[in-house]
Structures are given as C-alpha cells and as structure tokens.
Length: 329
Image 1 (spheres, rainbow, N blue to C red):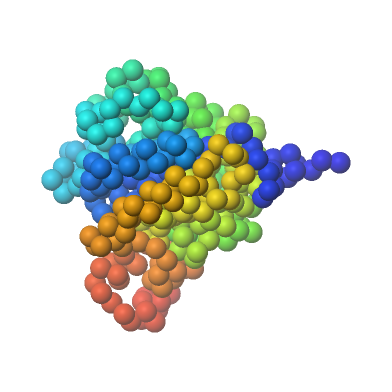
Image 2 (spheres, one colour):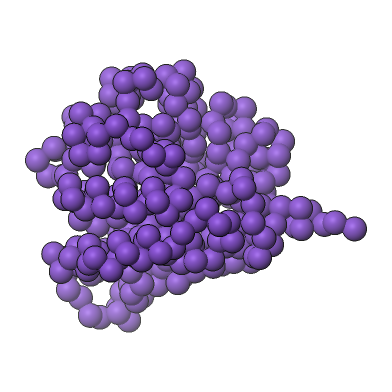
C-alpha cells in the first residue's frame, strides 16, 4: 500500500515539480545594503542558469519614497532599466523574480506590465495582519501577467487559528505558491513537518504549490528545507554560501548537492564560489552565518534585529544578551 509520504517523495526521490529559487541578491542584500557589483551579478546569473536553478531573485521592488536611493544599491529597487543594463535580455530557461513587501512597495506605480519587464514572477512578502493587502498585490501582479507567490513571514510567532485563516484567504486568491517562512530560524524539523502538512493540506484544497524559506539561526535551514522536500513541498529557497540576513539561509550548494534531479548541476555553483566572489564580499565587511547571538534569537523565537545590533556594537557579553532576551518574555 502506498502512503501519502511515498506519493509526495522521500529524501532519495526525484520530482520534476521541484523548483529551486536562488535568493542570494535579495536576502543577501540585507547584509550589504544591496551593493553587489555588476560583474558579481552577471557571474551569479550565469552560474545559476547553467546549474539548473529555476528562478533567480534579483532583489526588492522597494518604494523610493520610503527608502533613500543613495543609501542602497540598485537591487533594493530593481528598476527595469537597471536590470536590462546589467543582464540584457534573459535568453536562458531560468526565470527572474523580484520581491515586493506589503507596505513598502508602491506596486500600482512601480510594477509595469509583464511585457515590458525583465521579471517573470513577483513574490509578495506579508505578515499575517496584512494578508488582505497581500491579496490585492497578488491580484494586481497576476493581472499584469506575472507569476506570483506569497511569503507568510515569521510563521513561528503565529497561532494555528490565525495561520488557518491566512491560508484560507490566500488559497482563494490567484497566487501560485504559498511559502512557509521561518524568519527567526526557530522551527525544528519535527515542527516543520507539522507546518508543512498544514500548508500542503491547504495547497491540495486550493491547487497551490507550497514553498519553504528557512533561516539558519540554529543550523537547521538545510535540514528543514529537505524535510519539507520529503513531505512534498516543491518550491525551495536557497542562497549561495547561505548568504542572508543574520545567520543566513539554506546554502544553495548544499541543496543542489542533495537534490536527485539530474537537471541540477552543483559544479557550476562550486566554480562560482571558487572564483572568490563570496570571499570578496566578506573581505569588504559583509557578515552572515551562524553565530551565538543568532542562535539565541532562534532558540527564543525572536526577531534577529537584536542579534544584528549586538554584532554591530561589537558586544561579547553573550550571557547578558541571553538574559535580555529572557526578560522580553
């Protein structure tokens, strides 16, 4: 008798429905104010394309009335002319995506028709309390001709009832995929299985794909990602060298090494890493990856902003920091 788990996959199975998204420029941009050089972006684009990556996320579509263009690199805003100037026309099989945060994107002004855009997909980022606004953005982008997905952020802080309501609302929208987002890196694999089952049930009901975006505060981003993969989650986020805010994300090279689909070719990401692009970012001052303060915000299910401040201030009193987090209870 075939079980539901066997139908959706195991850690050794290969599914053609899997889609890998590289979020290095977007999540990694939170580390260096989105100041990636044009040669870096071109090299990463070329590596992803030949490695079989399905989507490359170039950054955010942020509102320049809220964020000062002088304080950020171009990938914070992802203007169409900037994308075309750096990458030209995309003639590869890999699709390009951009993230739009609810309340931080003037979508009616800044998101043009798909025919005039280098982007194939917009990913809408929302908290539970802004789901109606997210649905409005999803509907707008779909009407403009884009694929859409949605990230429900900080899911580890939400109640089961609130999450059920959110999944129902998004299920009734035209969004293509709904992402589990462990923003704080707080979720353990056993808990992730429960979350994945809940999302997959909603996905089956409404015909939606499910995705996973994991953070590495407790060194569990890769484990949680492959656990979701085995459960039947098909949209998988990763970043090269795990580059991302705070403790970072699931490393793309780990994910490609794990996936059994022959379309994914690890060697091209290794060649990109071999060329020293990520090492150069670290030498320029970009900091990401597992560290004690991020571990603690993950353990105590807290936003990583306090850990980021701890690191920026050069603090070493980790026990005092732990007590500060406990005092927030």
